Amino acid sequence: MKVLELYDLSGQVAVITGGGGFLGYRHAEAVLEAGGIAVLLDIHEELLTQTLASLAREAPSRVHIFVCDITQTERVQEVCDRIMEQLGRVDILINNAANNPKVESAGLTNLGRLENFPLHVWEQDLAVGLTGAMICTRIFSAVMSRLGGGVVLNIASDLALISPDQRLYRQAGLVEEEQPVKPVSYSVVKTGLLGLTKYCATYYAHCNIRCNALAPGGTYMNQNEEFVSRLINLIPMGRMASPDEYKGAILFLISKASSYMTGACLTMDGGRTAW
Image: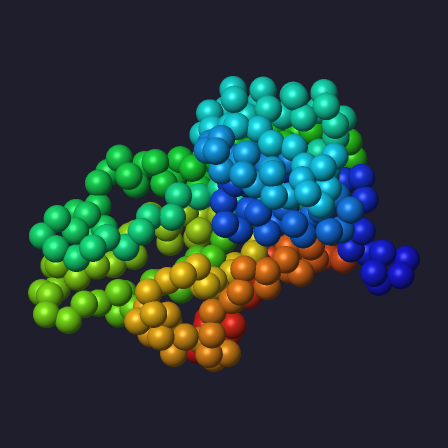
C-alpha cells in the first residue's frame, strides 16, 4: 500500500463526541477530508446544528448529528443503535467531549481554587470527560469488535503530562487565596484519559481495536493578550497552535498510518513538555 493510501478513510464511520465544539469541528473536518463519514455527538443541539450547516457544505451526505448526553448509558446505546440502523458500521471513536472549567475571575468568591472548588462541578467534569469516555468506549467498541476491529482516540492534553502553571493566571495586587487558577478537574480528567487509553489498548487488543491518545497544547481561541504572552514564553516554538494544526495528527492516529501503534500518547504541544 502506498503511503498516502494509509490515510484514506473512505467509507469509514467516525463517531466524535463533543462534535459541536471548537476542536470537535476540526476533528470532523479531518475525517471528511480523508473521505470518511463524521457522526457528531453533543449535548448542545444548537451547536450541533451550526456545525452541521457548516460541514455539510463540503460533504452533505457524510455528516450526521445526534443530540446525546454521553454520561447516560441508555442514551449512548440508543444513539449507537440508530447509527447502526442508518450507517451499518462504526470504525472510529474520538472521545473529545469535556467540560473545560474556566479560570474564574479573582476575588473572594473565586470558586476555581482547590479549597473552594464545588464538589458538584468536580463530579460534572469527571462525568463528562472521563465517565462519558468510558461509556462511549465500551458501547462503540462492542460494535467495532463485532465488525472486526477499529480505533479509539482519546483527546487528552499537555496538562495530562504536566501540572497547570498557575503563574499564567496571576493578577497583581491580589493575595494568594484570591488568585485565579486553572481548576483541578481538567488535569485530573485528562490524566485519567491516559490511564483509560492504556487499559483499553490491552483490553481490546484481541478484538483488533487500537486505542491511543493525543495530548494537544494550547490553541489560539481569542484569549487575553497577557495570557498568551505568558504562555508562549513556556513554549519552545514561541507560539500557540492554530485550530487546524492538529488535523494531521488526528488523521494519523485514526487511520492505517498508525496501524502498529496502540496504548500510546502522541504529544503535540510546541515543545512545552520538553522544558
